[in-house]
Length: 264
Image (tube, rainbow, N blue to C red; front, side, top):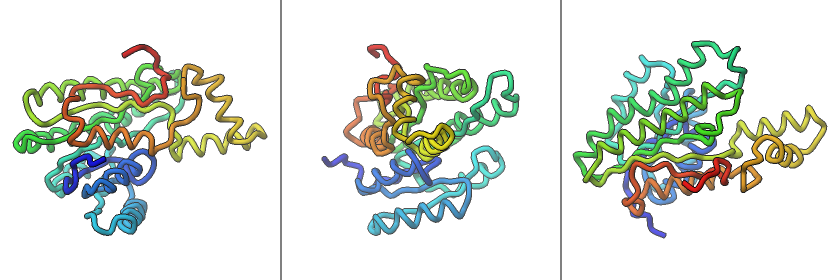
């Protein structure tokens, strides 16, 4: 299927691994020029070179920004070219009890998870509106409504993203620009892989057994009853970034394996 985005330029935050890298790869396969993002230059360049080898006919580059460093953000955003597709994917979390979560933890997660997308959208959206075409996508999480007790501060940021995204969508009324949110469920990212390995070693079980018990005991609401693959999430993001998704705006698209429940 031709998604009609060949020659577009995309910037994906937090894209040296996981959902972000899978999204960059999926967009590149559609002929999109991709700008990757990471916090460290070494890891960023490794990801850029890996993608360049796979897609030598695309323009693949990187922009090193730590979105917890406001000074660095201001310095680096000026290097961005005109962006057609913005994927606000970068996110951090701390898994601790509510009573042990410091004010600084709340502030840092809000700064990275929410304000990164706010600042980028503020810079990029005006040109999209002028060009009468653009796609802005925020990556939220099933935690936005499930709210695990050890991830309350993280969940707060993922809920806030929904409001920001919907509000920005209202600024695009009557144009060819759309703003939507993707809500992944439990996904087999590097972090999830590490969780499975650590738990398997600790409990003397296989990774498959740990995954089964996770969905039996912790995420029992999941209808998928397994971790989604990063490519499965990236496929939905890529479609929503395409010209074919033009009738969807201001929406929250679940890719949660049914974990969040409800009919909407």
